[in-house]
Length: 508
Image (cartoon, rainbow, N blue to C red; front, side):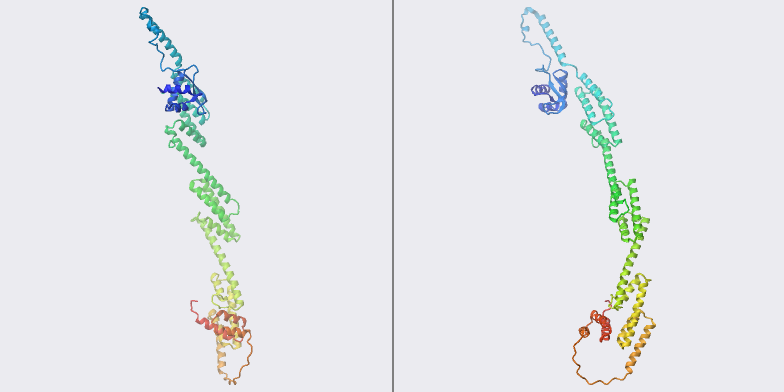
């Protein structure tokens, strides 16, 4: 059984019209184009009708096939006279002539029936199909994917009816030219979605045409433009975010940092984008202006924060580095002033309680010296050192007036450490020597008869001194000196403090 017989039997037994795909699937005739050719041939022979409609098999609206109602069977060739007919069993007297005449008549009738049943030839049908599609296509102002696909399928059907049809081949060539022009126009107008849909439709109709494959010139050009458009869109988004963070007059380090990160990402996407370069210039101007404003208002930490946030971006830029150095110098100066103020306040407190040079590391003279290292011309520190020296002079004279020579020596030694070439030191030392000479010249008093001292209750001063007199605890000794500056054991307390200091290692 031929493929044409299979198609005929399938349509005769089908319930309703069927499309080419359903006929191909139901008969096993492959590929589908062969079913299309057979159906068109049977249409030209008036055995079936083809029209657009809904397929009773798949339910889709497509080109469908239905047998004509008068067709019961389709002979594969024109009918021939039956040799067993009674006409051929006539008596011999009818003669050979009558038989030949009958055969000729029957043959003529059969040939006329065949011509009537066959209908127009495939060339004519293909011509008609091309003309119909061409008239519908016309010259559209915009070739849409739907219009292109309908026209392409119509021309393909004409070729299936009559392979090699010149008109259909030329029409397909013209259609391809229109398609390429429409794709290029869409790309030029940045209608990238339309261009993509047209390329997809062309690839669906002509899957073997490399021009519309993903590696073809038009798809590659479209892919490049899509990528470029996406890049521009992302750069625009990043620039918008950066602009939001940079606009206004209250820039801070966090906002500057985020804005610059957005600009850096945009620059990575397209280093040549003028918009990004302009945004960087704006950002730099904003940072510089905000830092200068912070410095002018005395807000050094904020100026430093802004410079640190933007420093990585403009490292090496002469103007920006000059601003950075200015901020660093002012910040360092401010920190130095803060430290000076703290040291001066602490030194004043030490001076008020006679922590003049002791204890080491926490005394007025040491702190005034630190201030003068940071600020050699600091008037408060210079005045403070003078007051420390004057206080040592006062304490030394008071000790001499009480006859406390050892205490006076210790005080004069501390004074000499602060004022090594002072005439006051020499004068005080001579007074100590005179006091000592006076004591040596005085007669030794006769010792009184030992008497048992009365047992008196110790007061607070006695209790404190008895607890610390044999120790080298400078804190306890200093506590006694501060509590009882004119106490009964004050000279011994100063002497014990000097001994403890002389025993201390030099590195402490």
